[in-house]
Length: 447
Ligand code: 5AD
Ligand code: SF4
Image (tube, rainbow, N blue to C red; front, side, top):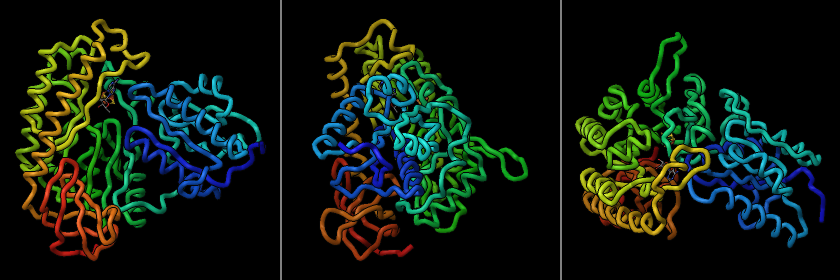
């Protein structure tokens, strides 16, 4: 077997949330700046970055089995791939991974990946490295400039979370809330638009907690950032995720009624419809206060599509409490949603709470919840049929001449027409399915 040398090709495998996808893209740019190129589709890469997620399920075991698979594939090809473990499992279990998996050349946490290039050089020289430091915002300044991007691009504006929901590992893996500086974000947004982005999704574990200062030292809030970005020529759409119900300001709600580029879609996790469970989760809102908040968004933007996150089987959750979640779902009628079985995360308060719910009970509740959520998603899509809307083209469809894009309400829409990537096209929605809609082009509008 050949010894490890400087890799020529790389592949980043990102798991979990959109912030990981963003981090994965930036790691790729960093490696490309060092002359390492993306491995062609279907070919083994010299360097594989496993950009891991720790939020649910058997995340750590999955990393070890992925490592095992890479080592085996390398042996069969007579090569020794360089393996980097990044992301939240790296942050939480870095030292242990190094000790247990000798094939891993480096472990790099989400706040330290700007050092990946140096770590690759070290690994090529046979030195294994772990970096899980959490310096404040050092990473972004050290990353290379953005180059090629898709029509819809992510922009991380904030990282970390101070909420400490009792089930959640994020405050431990991603650390305390930090906001990226206003001027850096404006510059990165401009670069993204220059590189072809027509939509920006502002990312953060708790984006609403973002705060900054303009060049005169005046405070700017999250809604101020949105309003400034909306002035960027060439940018058609702005979205953001994820928000916490307690940080939704008057200014942000007003922006939804006033800023045309801010899309009518709100992902606002609620987790449960039971006030007792919400309290045990340390969510600091009630089902009622959440519903009232949604009403305020609907008042300024009646067509807003709503999305949420749900956890079933939180410790101590009774059948009656679960039914309160179903009742909330049936009241809100979400356009989209993400629902999960509770998964105990090591070191979080909920993991040692009494009343852990049996797996079969969780399975059954998840099925019932998803049936309700799917019903409302399909109903939302069906109610869109007959509407005309703009669709931003994000990629080619499966058939020749077919395109796939997103409606303002984040629905996938496919249609045929003489269009190009990044076009904003006027479409009539003609047919609805559970996960997408068919459209008919009314007027291609070259952007
Ligand atoms: N178990 C199940 N779901 C979880 N989430 C976060 N932590 C856990 C956990 N321990 C879900 C929440 C959150 C989403 C990103 O993941 O619903 O909003
Ligand atoms: Fe986790 Fe979100 Fe709660 Fe923060 S607000 S602790 S990221 S679930």
